[in-house]
Image (cartoon, rainbow over all chains, first blue to last red; front, side, top):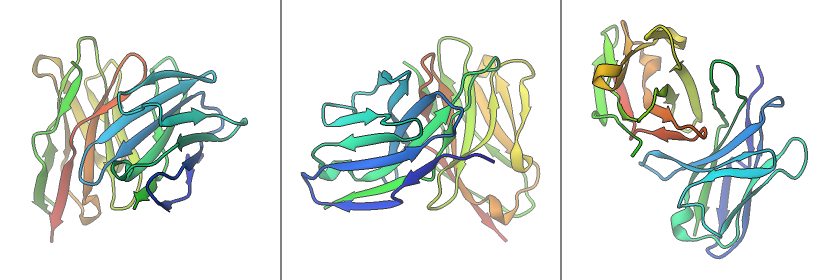
Amino acid sequence: EPEVTQTPSHQVTQMGQEVILRCVPISNHLYFYWYRQILGQKVEFLVSFYNNEISEKSEIFDDQFSVERPDGSNFTLKIRSTKLEDSAMYFCASSRRTADGDTQYFGPGTRLTVL
Amino acid sequence: AQSVTQPDIHITVSEGASLELRCNYSYGATPYLFWYVQSPGQGLQLLLKYFSGDTLVQGIKGFEAEFKRSQSSFNLRKPSVHWSDAAEYFCAVRNQGGKLIFGQGTELSVKP
């Protein structure tokens, strides 16, 4: 069964450094999402992406964040200058819209630790 | 504002007992509702979803959920819990743009 994959599984970085989190969505999906989960808290939406454009973004997704689909298979989240509060589990999800709605399939997540 | 509330942060049930996890939502239109499960260190796995039609939906692993519009609820149930069901359970509602809004989660513990 096709699945969403994410790399790396764990990333440790110093505050102020740039990180890129990578995702490979399910191949026939057209809608892509990033969510994050700070330890012990709920899963929060960051951004959705369709047709090479951001469809919706949350207030968390400020100028430090960017997303890109650099080729036909990868979907990346870049954090330009990491802060301590960016430490979280980051989940990528993908979906395709069908007549009965759509279902987002999640990857296993990347745990980002900012020191 | 759209929101999801899961009133129970932590529930403990005995193996073999029945389970009900509560979920209430606030959403102006007909909601698309989901339950996801997250095992420790794992991603989110879809258990079931409601888009329209029959208000009782069946999911994987023997779970079911019932959509009750009058109560703005979408409670998850399982008749007999197994030790492997111990995990965190998230209810979510999808907005028009596709964004999922999650509840706080309910952590389920299963005692032998």
